[in-house]
Image (tube, rainbow, N blue to C red):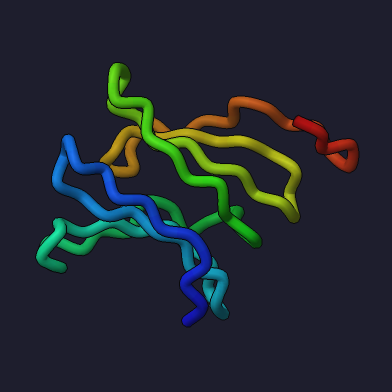
Length: 91
């Protein structure tokens, strides 16, 4: 497992992180390590750039390999592509 990025969302008492291992994924848990949950584990390669939009309660991330920015609800539901630039990824 290669934990690359992590984000602590204090308002929700939650930790989010990315894993670039054999099966890339984005996960979360409570700050005491309980209630671990996979947020996304499909169509990912280099997930990074995690941030939380507190107002909409959504998690956003970039995937440097797939050249997209995606988001989901904090529980992993409602995943959607926000920006898809194919091979021309500049933000």
